[in-house]
Amino acid sequence: MKLAILSDVHANLPALNVVLSDARRLGAERVVSLGDLVGYGPEPAEVLQVAYARIDHFVLGNHDAVIAGLMDPGVFNPAARAMIDWTARRLNPRAAKFLAGLPYVLTGPSFRCCHGNPASPAAFGYVLEEGHALEAWQATAERFLFIGHSHVPGLFVLGHSGTPHWLEPQDFGWEENKRYIVNVGSVGQPRDGDVRASYCLFDTTRGEVFFRQVPFDLDTYRQALTRTGAPVTGTYFLKIADQGQPQPLREILDFQPLSREQVGNRPVAEEQLGRAVRAARRWRIGAAALLVLFLAALLGAGHLWRRARPATVEFAALRQESLPPPACGAGCLPRPGRTGPVSAAARLDDWTVRLTHPERQQVEVCPDDAPDPGGPAFRLASGEPLPVVLESRSVAAQRGMRFQVQAACRSGKGFQGYAEIALVQTGVDGVDRPLVHCPVEKLTADRWKSLRRSAPVEGLREDGAVRWVLRGQFAGELLVRDADLHRTK
Image (cartoon, rainbow, N blue to C red):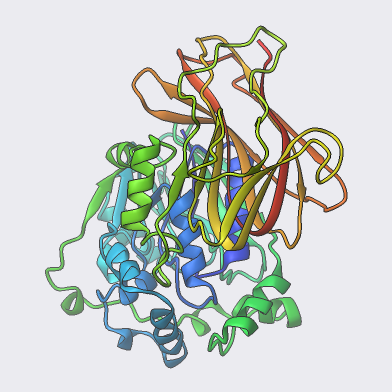
């Protein structure tokens, strides 16, 4: 399995969107967050919404913990406390309740994930020097330890000599009798003198780790700071972007790790990846009814943690039986059929629509000649950045078949956000498995962009229906036409 492991998003929405798109493009099957989704940044509610839509597994960070009421804000410096107070006012009680339920530790075969030093996860200690690394290794047994917290990517390695060695970020594969502590860096608040968002890809089968640093839109982040009135006194990476003068790390750390007395007998909740994967599958891309119930109950009926909204709604396809598999070289999805807005009273024969906030979102089918000639198009519109899903009726498929997911897209009025098309298979066990993620990127308003991606190379590994899915979170309008599943083998 290929995991994308990220940390320290800190309410930076542009950086999170870029990292998630990059990870999916590179084939990440699951995404793990090592904590601190909130704090520092200007868009905590928006980041939480994207995270719950697109991240599979979470552990608790110290900024998450203070919002959840699990930690005294007094352990942060005054500037950080001001942001904590502001963030808490931006979020509703559902945020604190969810964050309070996150585990401190996530484990899997040969690896362990937590926010800070694994020797005492609830203390949120840093791993900055060799002594810290030895303490972490002595308290754990796994070959790989993945952490964040310091916002500086790199790794400690322990080999035959018994002496830890710090290495700058570099891709590597495991070696016999060696152990590794991998700091994945920070998505939203980098502190290593590089203003790009940092995360890691981890191939659990091969034991290989790849560091990624991707640029994000600094101007959009600055505009969000201004628009929201966040009381930010000094965003480190923006100073680097403007002045190019990095400071020593210890001068910019704003958190005092908890003492043994402060931690006390607090239970340290752990979660195993296998169990977490099964839990995630029950609500991610799963049965439509379960997804609707989950979003309505857990996500507070719409725009996640900020204020109450109308419940998520689904306009299910009128026909539910699977489409027959196409001949090799042919497409299999029917055109939308009727035109006009999709609603409970005007559903489509073969397409299902899910809206987070039906009063602020709309999906409609445009005629063949609108917005321009070339066939009917879906117009997906949203008054603010909210999740939306459009998916086809299932297509029967057998082991060995290969499909290409395809569409043509262009931006409409005011489009801003992310979207992707995906090929999803439902196995004989009823579990949904994403096979292809194709980000919808670099769109323009005057030209259709063709998107195509095939999988798997060797054909399907098992029998099970497949379907075309578009999911995203954006404001403005997105136009989609020529949506199809093309059988290539």
